[in-house]
Image 1 (cartoon, rainbow, N blue to C red):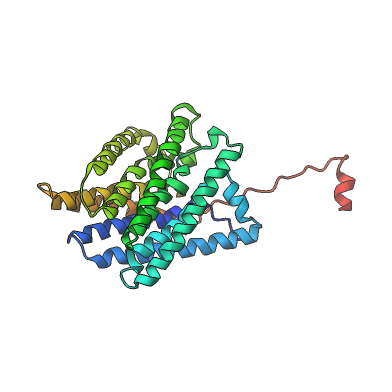
Image 2: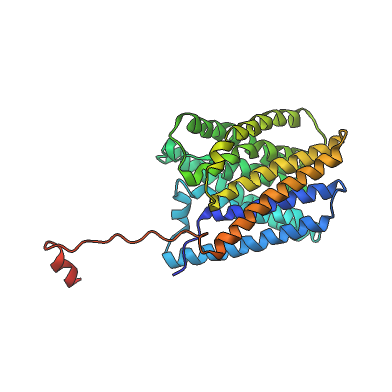
Length: 334
């Protein structure tokens, strides 16, 4: 029986797509061949398809329903990544070759993203959610969903829709971000496998910046500067957390670091490319090299874990029922 593939594995293609976007932004300013970015998009989509097929096979083998996965307070929000990856990939690499096909996939992704965001919001409002179960992955359905969908819509030329989706992301960020930070400040420590999700805290400002550039004609305005201020705060906070991160052993949730920091990289590359400060080209190449090396190292470590059979966790063993005089007869007659 195949091992179940956790939903957070969809963070792998999402992280690869973040790296692809970094290269595509660099290509936009004449710093790299556009083909590199589009090849990375294709790799991300291929990995997404493989993980999706493996996850579906695991669901069928273990008789897990989609409703049960969405209702899981820990893993449920990660299902959004299964939608965000093909939507953004279509805007990045399908739309330039086929406007109709690219726009169609983006529109389907937007609908699914909004439905998921609304569903999770309703579930958290009316369900009995424990604060200790909340983690930064709760940003994914509506905050990341809103900003990524906004970016994708802007890239395919649907500016009014992109503005509405940007609003969805901003308001969700204010509300959910307050809850998540409150839980991190005042709640119990996150379980070890979820500690890497703290990196997601740097993503909203960066992805919102990227969406703002895509919507508003690639210019640094007041909104972009405001986002940069909060983004800088979260980057410094992550530096303070380095001692905690460095103590962690490798696990699949390390992929939570990838898109978050790729977002910082491609937002920074966009800022440098738009403003052209002194030394912007060397700074851009350093940024691109660092994010490529970082995500490449996590990808290499993932492949190594896969080859060793250590990547996918083994299913929990069934509980052993001891045979006693009281239950022996009932066990032998079943």
